Image 1 (cartoon, one colour):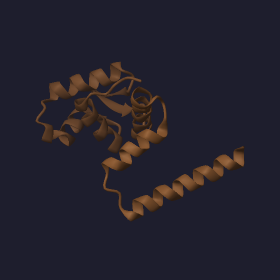
Image 2 (image 1 turned 90 degrees about the horizontal axis):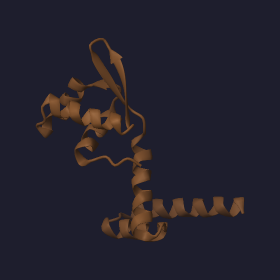
Image 3 (image 1 turned 60 degrees about the vertical axis):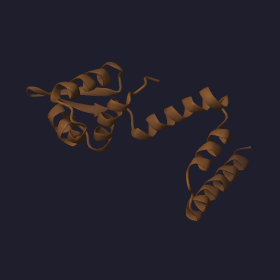
Image 4 (image 1 turned 180 degrees about the vertical axis):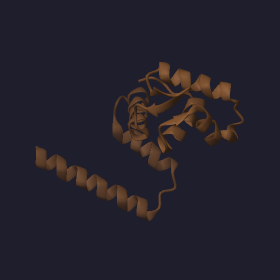
Length: 126
């Protein structure tokens, strides 16, 4: 998996919301970062080189499109954390995440329901 820096993640978040977009449109969306257009184009170029974005010419400009969904990237990041910090085990990672958040009763109920459904599906396939 290619790592995405924090700055690149800002660019990706804007493209995950709406794509394809050109560099100037992305610059408008991330204007709160205070980056100039050259910085935006440098970040876009890095993401293209990493194979995370595709480009398509449109007249004199390029349109950028993510090659991976936000969910897929998040899953890869979590998988890496699981492997690097928890020996590939999911339960310790889940426990850490659950302890770090102030889970509401609704969150706990939803998680319980998901776990019950996963167990039932696993029992079916066994």
